[in-house]
Length: 385
Length: 201
Image 1 (cartoon, rainbow over the protein chains, first blue to last red):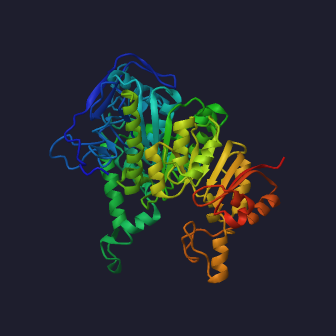
Image 2: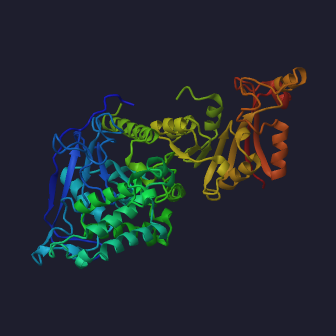
């Protein structure tokens, strides 16, 4: 791999204003909406080198680089996006946004509902993966991108990439679907429901009107995140990372004991509850639960994928039990059965579902190789030999 | 793609444009890349080696990470025109089962393997009394991936037992030549066996 790996440097988010009404799948219309997004690298003259990053449940637009020189942490996928990195900003123009319904600057439950003059809160309409895809297409129009070279997403992000291939077959060249599924399993929905219950049963939730009550369901959000986090790791990974190490207290003396793993989860949960909006969490988990493109086609995924033209890369991780290798295999089988182009890689990793966010060497080699070929292909198409 | 291995070039010549092709143990994807470039055939290749998979991805080959020994049940009946398996039969856990599966999912299949009946193998076993080691079979008996070696005769007997139809046989020298001598005594003089198989009529 290229040795000149660097950061995209300082980046500033921008806002796309969609001034026309937008009719959601649920039948409710938003009078207008905004999406916050960032871009890295530059769009070529032919506008063929754009890559869209679709975020997962708790992700956002800030995928790479720093907002301020003294930021403690870069964007959430900085290890993968940048000059010389697998998603190489020397070659590609990368677009990353916060989805509609989010809480990082795009229109969502925290935004003002023009009809009431109050925040939408729990009244923010149900948003489906297809709505995200449509709004992302609006953003692409705005940026002058007719066709994405690739749309990349992990987990819930992978579902968006798949839906793009279904809804806009001519606007996506390749779909890179990582640690994802064509639909959630009952077990997966169950975990989401436990997380939602943790939030909605918090007395500070006030049926979603916590902001007006000058409160926040911190405890519920923390619990939701803790549950989620455990399912994103693997048993082996947790053993390796925390073991039974004790952070504070002595069990022999009858102290209040805190294991490392507890301390880690508390910390994760607390910091999450300070930044993430509870209504958004409920909304995003429902979008996840409801996603099932095959349901419109007699539960036959191959039929649902019949009109796709994109090539697919489907990546999964051995220890991921939340979005297991088998779920990815279902996507692959349907694509093969529909006669579509698909390649796969099953990455050995002990980090569970979280693997898709980590710089695992083979994983990055796979992305790098695939995108290198894609770039060569674009290059040949733009300047025929 | 001028450097295509002679056996792969021969196989490529037997595959029609627009055919649906599955290559089991596709290695570095040379056959599929060649078919893609020259015949607009977008086949799929199965492999488990990370480096092979990376090379396939770099070539734009549809490589699927899947272990042949874990079965092919995810592929539907007659979903391919041609299922190819080159130099891999001898290393699968259940060659009989794999062959049956190949002709369930494919209308036809092509199988190549090193012929263990070649006179050098026979001579080494007879004279030295040890498992043969050759250019095609370079491993010692204890660490060889080739766990199911067979001769042309063995293979043909298995085809009969499974009710598979031999459409075409070609047994060749290390340089992929099919000389008159080899065609007289293929099981003795040929190093590599090539079979095109179909379902029983």
